[in-house]
Amino acid sequence: MHAIIVANAPDFDANPFAKLLASADLVVAADGGGNALRAAGITPHVVIGDLDSLEPDVEGIFRAAGAEVIRHPAEKDETDLELALLLAVGRGAGQIDILGAIGGRWDQGLANVAMLALPELAGLRVRLLDVAQEAFLVRGAAEIYGVVGDTVSLLPLGGPAHGVTTRGLYYPLDGATLRFERSRGVSNLITEPPAHVSVGEGLLLMVRHHKQ
Image 1 (cartoon, rainbow, N blue to C red):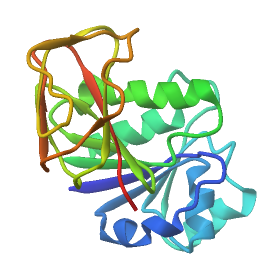
Image 2 (spheres, rainbow, N blue to C red):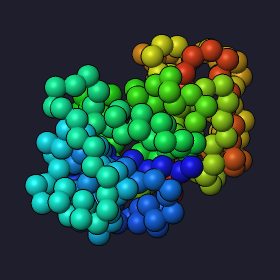
Image 3 (tube, helix red, strand yellow):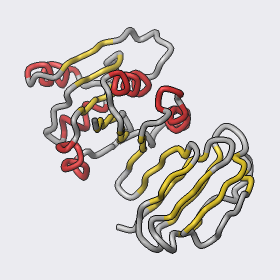
């Protein structure tokens, strides 16, 4: 099952993703992410969070249109996006795309990236998406789809990544160690799509900036 979660990034525009949203089996608004969906004329299947960021009239509009609204207390351990991710996993999603996760407060954006390492997401295909960028966590090995010339960065998450090997990138890596505090993996290029990356130990964040 394909789920799409819309987070509450400031000024996020859902319109460029209308076709993708229409194809999803489950659309979840993480609290204020519902505002962007409402502006695009899209009703989510579920709205979840403490609803402190959702515009007052939007909740009623979504309820009237048949959306499920799950309200959590403001004092909680999880962010609204984490609640949305856990809900999607609990409902059987095998692929999760997250929109509007980057932008605005740095702390929330960094936390959203780190959440890709949630143990509940292991074995699932989970991506952060923007109009010209995508990011996902490499656990073991992954294909990197795109076109020749797309920029690819490989960033260790939570510590060093050992045994990093790539294929189809301009700057090849063969059993390399990428360190969390070093920038060696930034700004590679796809030369033969799909490119391939594998990591022997650790977690590796793949960020691809694609041509429009």
